[in-house]
Length: 147
Image (cartoon, rainbow, N blue to C red; front, side, top):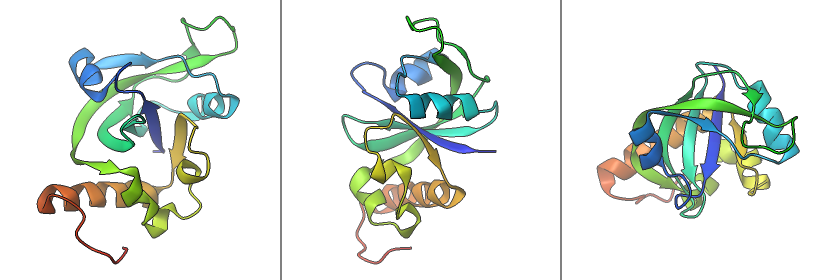
């Protein structure tokens, strides 16, 4: 299983929209590197839904299909995947918290901040989930030391 982070503007399509819809086609991605990431996705892969306008991770989704032609794209070479909502994170994880975690040192997420489909290493996935648990239990990050 591979791990991904999918960015969306919450005013355009938010986590709550995905929960309400249950499943959606992740369309409208134009960046060539992000397109390559969509092509690499497989059914069963996991994805973090990230609200880019709020700069925080909010939910866990599952890739529900392999890449297929994006029906909303004018360019015939663009693809999309279907994504299914699984569960919200226990608490949203802000970008600033991820910047403090060693697992994210050198991460594509931090190096290429505008990339809308980002691969996550297993350690990044694990640490993001752990941060969400900490924030949910404490009401915020109240620690200075890193994992």
